[in-house]
Amino acid sequence: MGLQVVTSDAHILGVVKGARIDTTTWTVRYLNVKLADAAANRLGMKKRFGSPTISIPVSMIQAVAEMIAVSKSLGELEKAKEVVEYKE
Image (cartoon, rainbow, N blue to C red; front, top):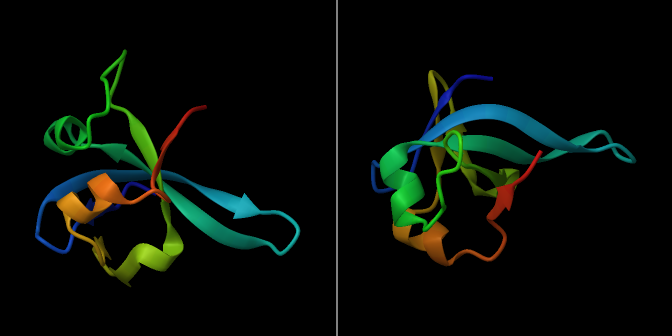
């Protein structure tokens, strides 16, 4: 948790705040990412009391080190139907 997430076109997407786990298989399916302001604006997410959070399928994760690299650009994420707003 807390790792920075960067898109394939080098935009800072945000910070990992959690994960969604399939409890039948004990597999991580999504990472919950709290969006940076610029990414939230680009993705059309409304800011309420804090930055919005999205769920990104782990299939979009390209690499994990000091940060997490996503295999999609910010524009591709904007159009991706499998990326959804996460609501607690």
